[in-house]
Length: 126
Image (tube, rainbow, N blue to C red; front, side, top):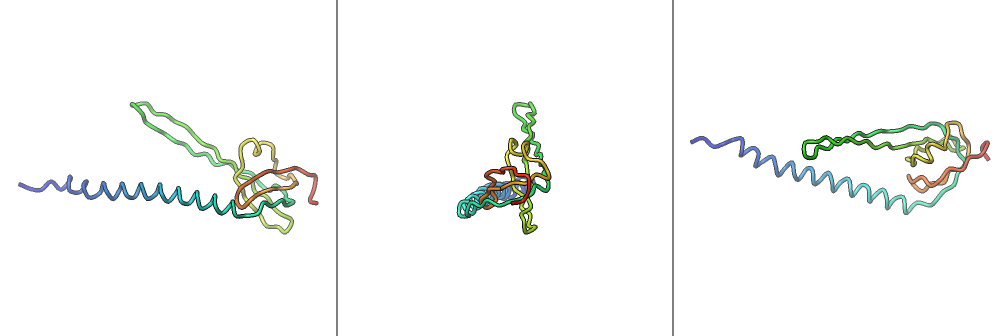
């Protein structure tokens, strides 16, 4: 009788696949905690800026449950700010703030590390 190579292959691959998926989850969670900790250690800064650009990133998800496809999407909003020295900072912001900010606006940006706090519009650099 020949050994069943398919089942031997599955018995070998399944644990590796499980460890890989579990490792990716742990890595993603650890990276998020590291970013959160980094931001908490940074000072809260308020600087004069000009809004250079805005962009969105849409992520689509499909989930099959009981034979029914559930589709959803998530939208992430980003704005690029330029400080007086010419350096640029791109921060993820919420949808409400994204809608209130326009390219070309001048104002005061308050942020902490990579965490956006608020943007207060002015007419020009101070």
